[in-house]
Length: 142
Image (tube, rainbow, N blue to C red; front, side, top):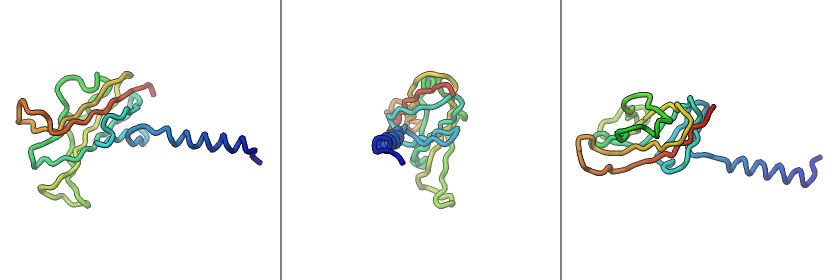
């Protein structure tokens, strides 16, 4: 039978483990991020895929874009030149409704950087983005 001290230590260990949660949803080789993860530090391992899913509505002209220049100081790279746009609502494609824009990246080198995406109209020059999300990343060896 466990002593009171052993049982107390076991309970504390379980409680601490439950507190050790990082931003995003990590499933195997994929780290999934959403707007609610904005400004939360995210731990990623080299080789993992980072998938960002953000609400969007392209019918308004707005889309999520990577600012020009290096992505997150080169610690991750986009898997595709553009995002995917998932407009399915309950399995049905619907016109004129919001959807989810999906970006995918691969962690390629150890280091830290911030992944920034801007919600803007690409044809409007000199206008601030309507929204910005930043995901601070820390990429480590597998």
